[in-house]
Image (cartoon, rainbow, N blue to C red; front, side, top):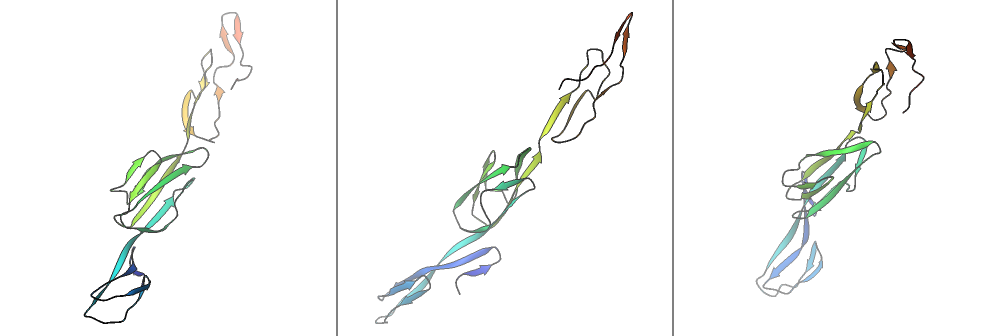
Amino acid sequence: NSPVLAGPTQYVASGAVVTGNDAVPVNSTNTSLTLTNEATLTWQWATNYWLDMTAGPNGSVDVADGWVAAGSNVAIAATASNHWHFTGWSGDTQGCVSAANVITAAMTQARAITANFAIDPHTLTVVSAYGGAQPGTTTTNWGTALSCYLTNSPVLAGPTQYVASGAVV
């Protein structure tokens, strides 16, 4: 019956220990012996926990879902798509250590961990030597279309007139 599943925990037979008699291990779930004495055969089990990895929209992680040996540590790196950035980890992260976009998951329990991402913001400053520049300074998400304009062209300064002739980006 190996492996035995108990929700997100898996128990896998890892072999047997025989005391009081000679035995020949065949594999982790089969041992052969000729009983010649009073003996005890004790099956040994290893514990695995399920690691459920998710990358939020516009990013990825470098570790797939799977069973991981109890007591081990799994280093997971998050990578953002172009024009996005990593914002942090969420889920079953207690007991884990994170540094920037890498988290080390201590497999002391089953874990569901998500890497989160957000779109890159950019700032545009619209200026004019004679005022009236709109929208001024604004911060918005990458790829957002903006309308930039003047509210005061032409500008009269006594006998001089200043007329907008275009913009330099």
